[in-house]
Length: 439
Ligand code: ATP
Ligand code: MG
Image 1 (cartoon, rainbow, N blue to C red):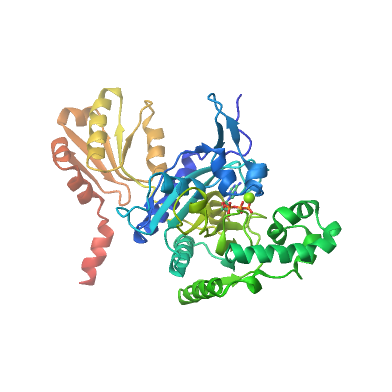
Image 2: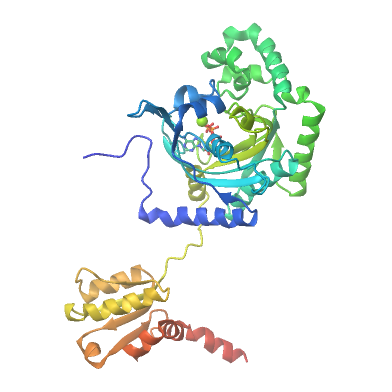
């Protein structure tokens, strides 16, 4: 038997409503923020990622799904969403005057990284992310962070906190980089192997090392805050002020650096405060990337974006036992008593679907007893029953599954106005009785 590839998951029909609910909730929020969807290809030239995400990043050095296609092109399955969006922005000149500025887009879909699979870490996983291109305003930073926060809040996910830092501009980073090298160089031999390797290529990454030995040194390492230019400092102060106004709980953490090379100024992560979903506690990460568009051949346009890991978000929903208000009732079930009436029943099912009601019947010639089981399993509101007698008299038996009230209705009346019949027969009479008693 052929099985799914390591690090991939099937999202089965039993789980899909939950995914769709989360996606719909996100789309509702995005609509209110005026973000539009963008769909870029799943694969791109590998150069796009090595040039943007960075030659020294984990993604490019270890995690890329890359291959040569039959035309000898070096291709990568996209590991992240920002570079493809920026490529599309440059390629289609979305900075032109006919496009709203800044550009505000979102994407939802699979990303691919060759990693060691574990809970909340897959090789194909789904991200929901946004990008704003063309605004340097701190309002944009706050707008994006607040959008991500709104999604978690709307879904009822709690116990989260925003970690915030500023990486400054390239010049600030350069000076900070040197300060870190100067600091770690004398103790180089005592650092973890990874950190020794990164000392000259990407010393900032030593700061988010998980190694306990490294952590001891990191505690006393210089912090970026002292290297920020007055402009970067003012920008960051405004972001924190805006978040305070919005009452979004955040902590400034000078040691978060993020894995991708292109970030500058504001960066943030949204993290679960306990270890309820294991080591993979970061559900959202993002920040500002003012040099990236130019680096990929576009104009000098600033950018801000984030990505949420949807599998981790799903784990959180389970872990926090959140019941999503998912509608899973069936409006109409048509029970056919015998094969001779199945066409008659099918006509009713299709008529119901045509007016927008959900409707189902049996396709396997099941007994009445087993059809009744289906009726209750599907949480049916209105049960329609047809047998030979009903067929001959051109009527249908109708039963409200909540109240047990039964009636017989002419087939013609149903086909004339199915919705009216449905409404008249699913009104909970108990509620109406209570109402008149109160009068
Ligand atoms: P991590 O440190 O956990 O590897 P990252 O910094 O590589 O995360 P980003 O590139 O910032 O992650 O991606 C944004 C979000 O996407 C992460 O916060 C996480 O929720 C999710 N994510 C990243 N990699 C994976 C993966 N392999 N499987 C599932 N979700 C992932
Ligand atoms: Mg990673």
